[in-house]
Image (cartoon, rainbow, N blue to C red; front, side, top):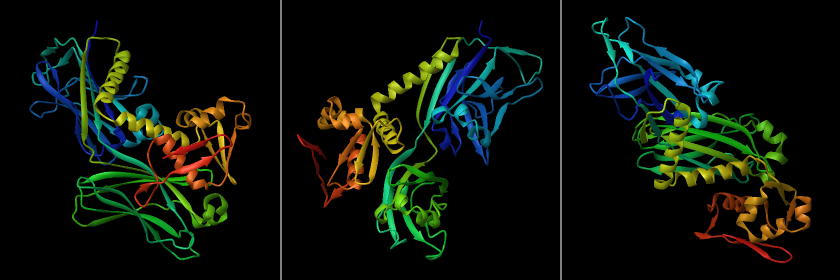
Length: 412
């Protein structure tokens, strides 16, 4: 027989929780309650509040790992009137991040025991008639984008190049600016400065990687910054991405044709909850219910939002960028780009015919492409994987044709 009433709160995009947030409301003993997370310096404080805004005397609050075990927990002891759980940020985001934040989702359990001490009279036992558990889910709204910043003639001009990454009333006008420092003999010859004008107070994260001549990410650097609500320009100096000495030492690898390619992952958020769901259940075995609850939430979102499509495009682009489980090489001059036969076949009838017949490309697992530069091929692959146009000429889509002995492939 179940001896407790449990509330499970799953929070998606938890790494972007930098403001206080509260869960959807639930009913316990006829009272409306909710859970609250307060961000205090390098710690999180979790508590349960009632409809009057007072901290409710619950029995136990726990941070659960991906297998459902409680490793950070706090229990209400006799003689105590309040309960909250303080947890260090380093515990959640440290070496056991994958256990506490699978897919950047945290799970918090608030447990009301069937018998708890009445904190006012100290001797009167209060019994709960609740027979269900509550499963609630929140999602912190995050706007993210992944893009390629190509810096041509890099060694001739280090500074003065800008790239707009965001322009909205909510987040303001945000730009990446390439700056020079130190002079030609300096080991830190360039850096990136992020500038913003206007917009609400928000938290942003930027991750920058240098791409080598095969399109593989190296030298990844990330940083985070809080932009206050201001009417003037605020600048954020990003940590050095790569030393100038390494660029010069690996010029053929990292600066092909004097071009530096930077892969940028940018995310920005107000730290506010944008989506909520709640499910009540009588199941005593909570692990299957937690899984079913998450699956139902995903199905619900799929019908009302394009997020799932965006996630798929992002995932496909990720396996291309990182060379995950590639099974074919595209050789463009001295450059070799790894790709996937199934995706190329699905997007191009010529590739499909090539890989399903006993052609030399199938046997050698290499497709030689001539008369097309490697940057054009990379843009074509980005389109094939992400269904997004990454290059325009005079406001019109540029069409590229690759001739084969028997047919022609076209991509927009």
